[in-house]
Length: 123
Length: 375
Image 1 (tube, rainbow over the protein chains, first blue to last red):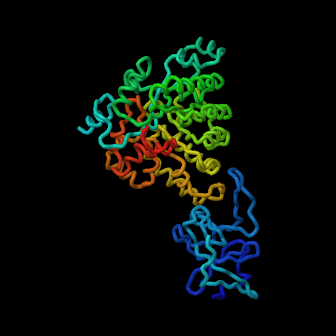
Image 2 (image 1 turned 45 degrees about the vertical axis):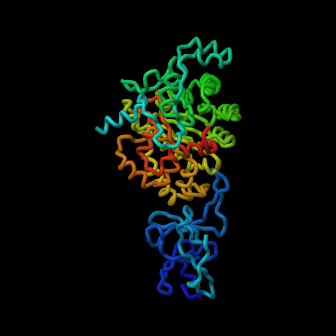
Image 3 (image 1 turned 120 degrees about the vertical axis):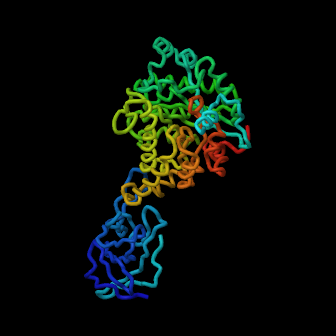
Protein backbone atom coordinates (compact mmCIF):
# COMPACT_ATOMS: atom_id res chain seq x y z
CA UNK A 1 0.00 0.00 0.00
CA UNK A 2 1.59 3.21 -1.16
CA UNK A 3 1.25 6.19 1.11
CA UNK A 4 2.34 9.78 0.76
CA UNK A 5 5.77 10.45 2.29
CA UNK A 6 7.05 13.86 1.18
CA UNK A 7 7.14 16.45 -1.52
CA UNK A 8 9.62 15.42 -4.17
CA UNK A 9 11.28 18.81 -4.00
CA UNK A 10 11.94 18.35 -0.28
CA UNK A 11 14.15 15.31 -0.81
CA UNK A 12 17.70 16.64 -1.19
CA UNK A 13 19.97 15.54 -4.02
CA UNK A 14 22.45 13.75 -1.83
CA UNK A 15 21.67 14.00 1.87
CA UNK A 16 18.99 12.03 3.67
CA UNK A 17 15.60 13.38 4.72
CA UNK A 18 13.87 11.86 7.73
CA UNK A 19 10.06 11.78 7.63
CA UNK A 20 7.26 10.20 9.63
CA UNK A 21 5.06 7.83 7.64
CA UNK A 22 2.32 5.81 9.27
CA UNK A 23 4.04 6.08 12.65
CA UNK A 24 7.30 4.88 11.20
CA UNK A 25 10.44 6.95 10.88
CA UNK A 26 11.66 6.71 7.30
CA UNK A 27 14.80 8.09 5.71
CA UNK A 28 14.43 9.24 2.11
CA UNK A 29 17.41 9.60 -0.19
CA UNK A 30 17.57 10.78 -3.78
CA UNK A 31 20.34 9.29 -5.87
CA UNK A 32 20.78 9.39 -9.63
CA UNK A 33 17.20 10.42 -10.23
CA UNK A 34 15.72 7.73 -8.00
CA UNK A 35 14.25 8.14 -4.53
CA UNK A 36 15.01 5.42 -1.99
CA UNK A 37 13.30 4.79 1.33
CA UNK A 38 14.77 2.98 4.32
CA UNK A 39 13.69 2.50 7.91
CA UNK A 40 15.54 5.11 9.93
CA UNK A 41 17.19 2.67 12.30
CA UNK A 42 20.77 1.55 11.84
CA UNK A 43 20.87 -2.11 12.92
CA UNK A 44 24.26 -1.63 14.52
CA UNK A 45 23.28 0.54 17.48
CA UNK A 46 19.81 1.71 16.49
CA UNK A 47 20.90 5.22 15.60
CA UNK A 48 19.32 7.54 13.03
CA UNK A 49 20.65 7.91 9.50
CA UNK A 50 19.94 11.63 9.62
CA UNK A 51 23.10 13.45 8.44
CA UNK A 52 24.47 10.13 7.15
CA UNK A 53 26.74 10.12 4.11
CA UNK A 54 25.33 9.07 0.74
CA UNK A 55 27.59 8.31 -2.20
CA UNK A 56 28.23 5.93 -5.06
CA UNK A 57 29.02 2.34 -4.21
CA UNK A 58 32.47 1.08 -5.10
CA UNK A 59 32.89 -2.49 -6.20
CA UNK A 60 35.81 -4.67 -7.08
CA UNK A 61 36.25 -7.54 -9.49
CA UNK A 62 39.82 -8.25 -8.46
CA UNK A 63 42.01 -7.84 -5.41
CA UNK A 64 43.65 -4.44 -5.43
CA UNK A 65 41.24 -2.92 -7.92
CA UNK A 66 38.37 -0.59 -7.15
CA UNK A 67 35.81 0.01 -9.83
CA UNK A 68 34.07 3.30 -10.34
CA UNK A 69 30.63 3.47 -8.85
CA UNK A 70 27.97 2.13 -11.18
CA UNK A 71 25.22 4.62 -11.97
CA UNK A 72 22.30 4.01 -9.67
CA UNK A 73 24.26 2.01 -7.10
CA UNK A 74 24.81 3.92 -3.91
CA UNK A 75 25.22 3.51 -0.19
CA UNK A 76 24.19 5.32 2.92
CA UNK A 77 26.67 5.33 5.78
CA UNK A 78 25.41 5.71 9.32
CA UNK A 79 26.74 9.01 10.69
CA UNK A 80 27.69 7.39 13.98
CA UNK A 81 29.95 4.47 13.10
CA UNK A 82 29.98 4.52 9.31
CA UNK A 83 28.35 1.16 8.79
CA UNK A 84 27.40 1.16 5.13
CA UNK A 85 24.16 -0.05 3.57
CA UNK A 86 23.06 -0.55 0.00
CA UNK A 87 20.45 2.10 -0.72
CA UNK A 88 18.35 -0.20 -2.86
CA UNK A 89 18.32 -3.30 -0.70
CA UNK A 90 19.20 -2.04 2.76
CA UNK A 91 21.80 -4.78 3.06
CA UNK A 92 24.96 -4.06 5.04
CA UNK A 93 27.88 -4.15 2.64
CA UNK A 94 30.24 -5.77 5.10
CA UNK A 95 27.88 -8.23 6.70
CA UNK A 96 24.68 -9.28 4.97
CA UNK A 97 23.28 -10.55 8.25
CA UNK A 98 22.60 -6.91 9.06
CA UNK A 99 19.95 -5.22 7.01
CA UNK A 100 17.86 -2.06 7.10
CA UNK A 101 14.24 -2.40 6.05
CA UNK A 102 13.82 -0.89 2.60
CA UNK A 103 10.57 0.17 0.95
CA UNK A 104 9.54 0.45 -2.69
CA UNK A 105 8.99 4.02 -3.80
CA UNK A 106 7.35 5.85 -6.68
CA UNK A 107 6.84 9.45 -7.64
CA UNK A 108 3.38 10.67 -8.54
CA UNK A 109 3.17 14.28 -9.55
CA UNK A 110 5.28 16.20 -7.08
CA UNK A 111 4.92 13.66 -4.28
CA UNK A 112 7.02 10.71 -3.19
CA UNK A 113 5.01 7.64 -2.21
CA UNK A 114 6.34 4.61 -0.38
CA UNK A 115 4.87 1.16 -0.07
CA UNK A 116 4.88 0.56 3.66
CA UNK A 117 3.33 -2.86 3.26
CA UNK A 118 6.01 -3.98 0.86
CA UNK A 119 8.85 -6.12 2.04
CA UNK A 120 11.36 -4.15 0.08
CA UNK A 121 14.16 -5.69 -1.94
CA UNK A 122 16.28 -8.11 -0.11
CA UNK A 123 19.97 -8.57 -0.55
CA UNK B 1 52.64 -27.71 43.69
CA UNK B 2 51.05 -26.83 40.40
CA UNK B 3 54.33 -25.55 39.06
CA UNK B 4 56.02 -28.83 39.86
CA UNK B 5 53.27 -30.77 38.12
CA UNK B 6 53.68 -28.59 35.11
CA UNK B 7 57.36 -29.27 35.03
CA UNK B 8 56.81 -32.99 35.20
CA UNK B 9 54.05 -33.02 32.65
CA UNK B 10 55.89 -30.90 30.16
CA UNK B 11 59.23 -32.56 30.52
CA UNK B 12 59.95 -34.75 27.51
CA UNK B 13 62.46 -36.60 29.63
CA UNK B 14 59.59 -38.09 31.56
CA UNK B 15 58.98 -41.73 30.81
CA UNK B 16 55.25 -41.40 30.87
CA UNK B 17 53.42 -42.46 27.78
CA UNK B 18 51.60 -39.87 25.75
CA UNK B 19 48.62 -42.01 25.06
CA UNK B 20 46.08 -41.86 27.86
CA UNK B 21 43.21 -42.76 25.64
CA UNK B 22 43.95 -40.02 23.17
CA UNK B 23 43.95 -40.61 19.47
CA UNK B 24 47.49 -40.74 18.18
CA UNK B 25 48.68 -37.19 17.88
CA UNK B 26 49.80 -35.46 14.74
CA UNK B 27 52.62 -33.07 15.60
CA UNK B 28 52.38 -30.05 13.32
CA UNK B 29 55.90 -28.93 14.11
CA UNK B 30 58.96 -30.26 15.82
CA UNK B 31 62.31 -28.80 14.89
CA UNK B 32 65.31 -30.35 13.28
CA UNK B 33 68.52 -28.53 12.45
CA UNK B 34 71.85 -28.95 10.74
CA UNK B 35 74.94 -28.20 12.76
CA UNK B 36 77.90 -28.13 10.41
CA UNK B 37 78.20 -27.16 6.79
CA UNK B 38 79.63 -30.61 6.19
CA UNK B 39 76.12 -32.01 6.58
CA UNK B 40 74.86 -29.80 3.79
CA UNK B 41 77.94 -29.92 1.59
CA UNK B 42 76.79 -32.91 -0.50
CA UNK B 43 73.72 -30.94 -1.52
CA UNK B 44 75.46 -27.69 -2.49
CA UNK B 45 76.65 -26.82 -5.97
CA UNK B 46 80.42 -27.13 -6.26
CA UNK B 47 81.15 -23.42 -6.39
CA UNK B 48 78.91 -22.65 -3.46
CA UNK B 49 80.31 -25.62 -1.59
CA UNK B 50 83.85 -24.33 -1.98
CA UNK B 51 82.83 -20.85 -0.91
CA UNK B 52 80.51 -21.71 1.98
CA UNK B 53 82.65 -24.40 3.54
CA UNK B 54 85.49 -21.88 3.68
CA UNK B 55 83.38 -19.50 5.76
CA UNK B 56 82.65 -19.78 9.47
CA UNK B 57 79.43 -21.75 10.01
CA UNK B 58 76.18 -19.79 10.03
CA UNK B 59 77.89 -16.84 8.41
CA UNK B 60 75.02 -16.27 5.99
CA UNK B 61 72.27 -16.34 8.58
CA UNK B 62 71.01 -13.20 10.24
CA UNK B 63 72.35 -13.25 13.77
CA UNK B 64 69.87 -13.41 16.65
CA UNK B 65 69.98 -10.38 18.89
CA UNK B 66 69.04 -12.13 22.08
CA UNK B 67 69.77 -15.42 23.72
CA UNK B 68 68.33 -16.95 26.81
CA UNK B 69 71.24 -17.06 29.26
CA UNK B 70 70.32 -20.59 30.30
CA UNK B 71 69.65 -21.88 26.81
CA UNK B 72 66.32 -22.80 25.29
CA UNK B 73 67.01 -26.30 23.96
CA UNK B 74 66.96 -29.68 25.57
CA UNK B 75 70.30 -31.34 26.04
CA UNK B 76 71.60 -33.02 22.90
CA UNK B 77 68.90 -31.26 20.92
CA UNK B 78 71.15 -30.79 17.93
CA UNK B 79 74.49 -32.13 16.83
CA UNK B 80 75.71 -35.68 16.55
CA UNK B 81 73.15 -37.03 18.99
CA UNK B 82 70.25 -35.13 17.50
CA UNK B 83 68.35 -37.99 15.93
CA UNK B 84 68.88 -40.34 18.85
CA UNK B 85 67.46 -37.67 21.11
CA UNK B 86 64.61 -36.96 18.71
CA UNK B 87 63.73 -40.63 18.47
CA UNK B 88 63.91 -41.34 22.17
CA UNK B 89 62.27 -38.24 23.56
CA UNK B 90 59.69 -37.55 20.91
CA UNK B 91 58.98 -40.50 18.62
CA UNK B 92 59.26 -43.18 21.29
CA UNK B 93 57.94 -41.27 24.28
CA UNK B 94 55.01 -39.50 22.69
CA UNK B 95 54.18 -41.94 19.89
CA UNK B 96 52.89 -39.41 17.41
CA UNK B 97 51.21 -40.70 14.29
CA UNK B 98 53.01 -38.14 12.17
CA UNK B 99 55.51 -35.34 12.79
CA UNK B 100 56.15 -32.34 10.58
CA UNK B 101 59.76 -31.19 10.76
CA UNK B 102 60.23 -27.47 11.01
CA UNK B 103 63.38 -25.40 11.10
CA UNK B 104 65.06 -23.79 14.04
CA UNK B 105 67.91 -21.40 13.25
CA UNK B 106 67.59 -22.13 9.56
CA UNK B 107 64.32 -20.21 9.50
CA UNK B 108 66.48 -17.10 9.86
CA UNK B 109 67.80 -17.78 6.36
CA UNK B 110 64.40 -16.95 4.90
CA UNK B 111 65.13 -13.26 5.49
CA UNK B 112 68.87 -13.20 4.91
CA UNK B 113 70.30 -10.15 3.21
CA UNK B 114 72.84 -12.48 1.56
CA UNK B 115 70.00 -13.81 -0.49
CA UNK B 116 71.89 -15.67 -3.21
CA UNK B 117 73.94 -17.61 -0.70
CA UNK B 118 70.87 -18.12 1.45
CA UNK B 119 68.95 -19.52 -1.50
CA UNK B 120 71.67 -22.07 -2.18
CA UNK B 121 71.80 -23.13 1.46
CA UNK B 122 68.01 -23.32 1.58
CA UNK B 123 67.96 -25.58 -1.45
CA UNK B 124 70.55 -27.79 0.21
CA UNK B 125 68.61 -27.85 3.48
CA UNK B 126 65.47 -28.96 1.71
CA UNK B 127 67.25 -31.79 -0.07
CA UNK B 128 69.04 -32.73 3.17
CA UNK B 129 65.70 -32.85 4.98
CA UNK B 130 64.11 -34.98 2.30
CA UNK B 131 67.03 -37.37 1.91
CA UNK B 132 68.73 -37.49 5.29
CA UNK B 133 65.76 -37.14 7.63
CA UNK B 134 62.58 -38.43 6.06
CA UNK B 135 64.11 -41.81 5.29
CA UNK B 136 64.69 -42.42 8.98
CA UNK B 137 61.06 -42.90 9.94
CA UNK B 138 57.94 -42.98 7.84
CA UNK B 139 56.15 -40.79 10.37
CA UNK B 140 58.42 -37.87 9.56
CA UNK B 141 57.40 -35.25 7.05
CA UNK B 142 59.13 -32.10 5.90
CA UNK B 143 58.49 -28.50 5.05
CA UNK B 144 59.91 -26.76 2.00
CA UNK B 145 61.99 -23.89 3.36
CA UNK B 146 61.79 -20.79 1.17
CA UNK B 147 63.20 -17.30 1.22
CA UNK B 148 61.05 -14.21 1.07
CA UNK B 149 63.86 -12.22 -0.54
CA UNK B 150 63.35 -13.76 -3.97
CA UNK B 151 59.73 -14.87 -4.19
CA UNK B 152 59.98 -16.20 -7.75
CA UNK B 153 62.91 -18.41 -6.75
CA UNK B 154 60.94 -19.52 -3.73
CA UNK B 155 58.07 -20.53 -5.98
CA UNK B 156 60.46 -22.63 -8.06
CA UNK B 157 61.67 -24.34 -4.90
CA UNK B 158 58.10 -25.12 -3.87
CA UNK B 159 57.43 -26.69 -7.25
CA UNK B 160 60.69 -28.66 -7.10
CA UNK B 161 59.35 -30.59 -4.13
CA UNK B 162 55.67 -30.49 -4.89
CA UNK B 163 55.62 -34.08 -6.14
CA UNK B 164 57.31 -35.35 -2.99
CA UNK B 165 54.38 -36.36 -0.84
CA UNK B 166 56.57 -36.38 2.27
CA UNK B 167 57.14 -32.63 1.91
CA UNK B 168 53.81 -31.38 3.14
CA UNK B 169 54.06 -27.61 3.45
CA UNK B 170 56.10 -24.48 2.95
CA UNK B 171 58.10 -22.82 5.75
CA UNK B 172 58.86 -19.14 5.88
CA UNK B 173 59.93 -16.81 8.61
CA UNK B 174 60.42 -13.08 8.69
CA UNK B 175 59.11 -10.83 5.99
CA UNK B 176 62.42 -10.39 4.27
CA UNK B 177 61.47 -7.23 2.41
CA UNK B 178 59.93 -5.43 5.39
CA UNK B 179 56.54 -5.79 3.81
CA UNK B 180 53.79 -7.79 5.43
CA UNK B 181 52.86 -11.14 3.95
CA UNK B 182 49.74 -9.55 2.52
CA UNK B 183 51.85 -7.60 0.06
CA UNK B 184 51.60 -8.77 -3.57
CA UNK B 185 55.38 -9.03 -3.81
CA UNK B 186 55.06 -12.35 -1.96
CA UNK B 187 52.20 -13.66 -4.09
CA UNK B 188 54.41 -16.00 -6.14
CA UNK B 189 55.10 -17.94 -2.94
CA UNK B 190 51.47 -18.17 -1.92
CA UNK B 191 50.34 -18.87 -5.47
CA UNK B 192 52.73 -21.80 -5.81
CA UNK B 193 51.72 -23.17 -2.43
CA UNK B 194 48.03 -22.87 -3.22
CA UNK B 195 48.44 -24.47 -6.63
CA UNK B 196 50.35 -27.38 -5.15
CA UNK B 197 47.95 -27.80 -2.24
CA UNK B 198 50.58 -27.02 0.39
CA UNK B 199 49.94 -24.92 3.50
CA UNK B 200 52.35 -22.10 4.28
CA UNK B 201 53.80 -22.17 7.78
CA UNK B 202 54.79 -18.76 9.11
CA UNK B 203 57.06 -18.97 12.11
CA UNK B 204 57.97 -16.29 14.61
CA UNK B 205 61.52 -16.11 15.82
CA UNK B 206 62.94 -15.63 12.37
CA UNK B 207 62.78 -11.89 12.84
CA UNK B 208 65.00 -12.14 15.88
CA UNK B 209 68.01 -10.50 14.31
CA UNK B 210 69.39 -7.02 13.95
CA UNK B 211 70.66 -7.41 10.42
CA UNK B 212 67.25 -7.75 8.81
CA UNK B 213 65.14 -5.25 6.97
CA UNK B 214 62.22 -6.04 9.20
CA UNK B 215 62.24 -4.99 12.88
CA UNK B 216 61.73 -7.77 15.44
CA UNK B 217 58.88 -5.97 17.16
CA UNK B 218 56.87 -2.82 16.66
CA UNK B 219 57.57 0.34 18.58
CA UNK B 220 61.31 0.06 18.87
CA UNK B 221 64.03 -2.39 19.64
CA UNK B 222 63.50 -4.58 22.68
CA UNK B 223 66.41 -5.01 25.04
CA UNK B 224 66.13 -8.57 26.26
CA UNK B 225 65.10 -12.04 25.22
CA UNK B 226 62.11 -11.89 27.55
CA UNK B 227 60.76 -8.80 25.86
CA UNK B 228 61.15 -10.36 22.47
CA UNK B 229 59.51 -13.65 23.45
CA UNK B 230 56.57 -11.80 24.92
CA UNK B 231 56.09 -9.55 21.94
CA UNK B 232 56.89 -11.78 18.98
CA UNK B 233 53.14 -12.24 18.64
CA UNK B 234 53.15 -8.82 17.00
CA UNK B 235 54.48 -10.12 13.71
CA UNK B 236 51.67 -12.66 13.47
CA UNK B 237 49.12 -9.97 14.24
CA UNK B 238 50.48 -7.79 11.45
CA UNK B 239 50.58 -10.60 8.93
CA UNK B 240 47.07 -11.77 9.74
CA UNK B 241 45.55 -8.32 9.28
CA UNK B 242 47.48 -7.76 6.08
CA UNK B 243 46.86 -11.16 4.54
CA UNK B 244 43.13 -10.89 5.12
CA UNK B 245 42.50 -7.24 4.27
CA UNK B 246 44.87 -7.17 1.32
CA UNK B 247 42.84 -9.98 -0.18
CA UNK B 248 45.31 -12.86 -0.10
CA UNK B 249 42.62 -15.43 0.66
CA UNK B 250 40.20 -13.89 -1.79
CA UNK B 251 42.83 -14.31 -4.50
CA UNK B 252 43.99 -17.77 -3.39
CA UNK B 253 40.92 -19.37 -1.91
CA UNK B 254 42.60 -22.76 -1.46
CA UNK B 255 45.55 -21.34 0.44
CA UNK B 256 45.98 -22.37 4.06
CA UNK B 257 48.37 -20.76 6.55
CA UNK B 258 49.65 -22.07 9.88
CA UNK B 259 51.03 -19.58 12.39
CA UNK B 260 53.68 -21.03 14.68
CA UNK B 261 55.25 -19.65 17.82
CA UNK B 262 53.15 -16.64 18.69
CA UNK B 263 50.69 -17.97 21.22
CA UNK B 264 46.96 -18.05 20.74
CA UNK B 265 45.07 -15.82 23.17
CA UNK B 266 45.59 -12.78 20.95
CA UNK B 267 43.55 -14.33 18.17
CA UNK B 268 39.99 -13.61 19.36
CA UNK B 269 40.79 -9.96 20.11
CA UNK B 270 42.36 -9.34 16.75
CA UNK B 271 39.53 -11.00 14.88
CA UNK B 272 36.93 -9.00 16.77
CA UNK B 273 38.81 -5.81 15.96
CA UNK B 274 39.18 -6.75 12.30
CA UNK B 275 35.47 -7.46 11.91
CA UNK B 276 34.54 -4.27 13.68
CA UNK B 277 36.86 -2.11 11.61
CA UNK B 278 35.83 -3.81 8.38
CA UNK B 279 32.18 -3.04 8.94
CA UNK B 280 32.80 0.68 8.80
CA UNK B 281 35.68 0.57 6.33
CA UNK B 282 34.19 -1.84 3.84
CA UNK B 283 34.57 0.51 0.93
CA UNK B 284 38.33 0.74 1.39
CA UNK B 285 38.69 -2.98 0.67
CA UNK B 286 35.71 -3.81 -1.55
CA UNK B 287 37.47 -6.89 -2.94
CA UNK B 288 36.60 -8.74 0.24
CA UNK B 289 33.38 -10.75 0.01
CA UNK B 290 33.17 -11.83 3.61
CA UNK B 291 33.98 -10.67 7.10
CA UNK B 292 37.64 -10.96 8.08
CA UNK B 293 36.67 -13.57 10.65
CA UNK B 294 35.28 -15.77 7.89
CA UNK B 295 38.59 -15.73 6.04
CA UNK B 296 40.47 -16.46 9.24
CA UNK B 297 38.28 -19.41 10.17
CA UNK B 298 38.60 -20.96 6.75
CA UNK B 299 42.21 -20.25 5.88
CA UNK B 300 44.35 -19.69 8.98
CA UNK B 301 45.41 -22.15 11.65
CA UNK B 302 47.29 -21.41 14.87
CA UNK B 303 49.84 -23.64 16.54
CA UNK B 304 49.55 -24.67 20.15
CA UNK B 305 53.27 -23.90 20.52
CA UNK B 306 53.79 -21.43 22.30
CA UNK B 307 50.37 -21.33 23.95
CA UNK B 308 50.12 -19.13 27.03
CA UNK B 309 51.08 -21.52 29.78
CA UNK B 310 50.76 -19.13 32.67
CA UNK B 311 46.99 -19.30 32.35
CA UNK B 312 45.10 -21.71 34.51
CA UNK B 313 43.01 -24.20 32.61
CA UNK B 314 39.89 -22.34 33.71
CA UNK B 315 41.25 -19.04 32.47
CA UNK B 316 42.26 -20.57 29.15
CA UNK B 317 38.84 -22.18 28.84
CA UNK B 318 37.25 -18.78 29.42
CA UNK B 319 39.26 -17.28 26.58
CA UNK B 320 38.49 -20.14 24.25
CA UNK B 321 34.81 -20.13 25.14
CA UNK B 322 34.63 -16.62 23.73
CA UNK B 323 35.92 -17.93 20.41
CA UNK B 324 34.50 -21.43 20.05
CA UNK B 325 35.43 -21.53 16.37
CA UNK B 326 39.08 -21.85 17.44
CA UNK B 327 38.35 -25.52 17.97
CA UNK B 328 38.90 -25.81 14.22
CA UNK B 329 41.84 -23.39 14.18
CA UNK B 330 44.27 -24.82 16.71
CA UNK B 331 46.85 -27.33 15.56
CA UNK B 332 48.98 -29.30 17.98
CA UNK B 333 52.66 -28.49 17.54
CA UNK B 334 55.11 -29.78 20.11
CA UNK B 335 57.91 -27.29 19.54
CA UNK B 336 60.37 -30.07 20.36
CA UNK B 337 63.28 -29.80 21.27
CA UNK B 338 62.71 -26.45 22.91
CA UNK B 339 62.60 -26.62 26.67
CA UNK B 340 59.05 -25.28 26.65
CA UNK B 341 57.80 -27.92 24.24
CA UNK B 342 54.54 -29.66 25.06
CA UNK B 343 53.57 -33.31 24.85
CA UNK B 344 50.22 -34.13 23.23
CA UNK B 345 48.52 -35.09 26.45
CA UNK B 346 49.82 -31.97 28.17
CA UNK B 347 48.17 -29.82 25.51
CA UNK B 348 45.09 -31.99 25.75
CA UNK B 349 44.88 -31.47 29.50
CA UNK B 350 44.64 -27.72 28.94
CA UNK B 351 41.84 -27.81 26.39
CA UNK B 352 38.08 -28.32 26.62
CA UNK B 353 37.55 -32.08 26.51
CA UNK B 354 35.52 -32.02 23.33
CA UNK B 355 38.24 -30.05 21.52
CA UNK B 356 41.03 -32.52 22.10
CA UNK B 357 40.71 -34.84 19.12
CA UNK B 358 40.40 -31.92 16.71
CA UNK B 359 43.33 -29.95 18.10
CA UNK B 360 45.69 -32.83 18.74
CA UNK B 361 44.99 -34.70 15.53
CA UNK B 362 42.16 -33.86 13.15
CA UNK B 363 43.00 -30.25 12.37
CA UNK B 364 46.52 -31.19 11.34
CA UNK B 365 45.24 -34.00 9.14
CA UNK B 366 42.99 -31.51 7.43
CA UNK B 367 45.64 -28.79 7.16
CA UNK B 368 48.29 -31.05 5.67
CA UNK B 369 45.64 -32.81 3.57
CA UNK B 370 46.26 -36.24 4.91
CA UNK B 371 43.52 -38.82 4.79
CA UNK B 372 42.11 -39.97 8.10
CA UNK B 373 43.68 -43.07 9.55
CA UNK B 374 47.02 -44.14 10.88
CA UNK B 375 50.02 -44.65 8.68
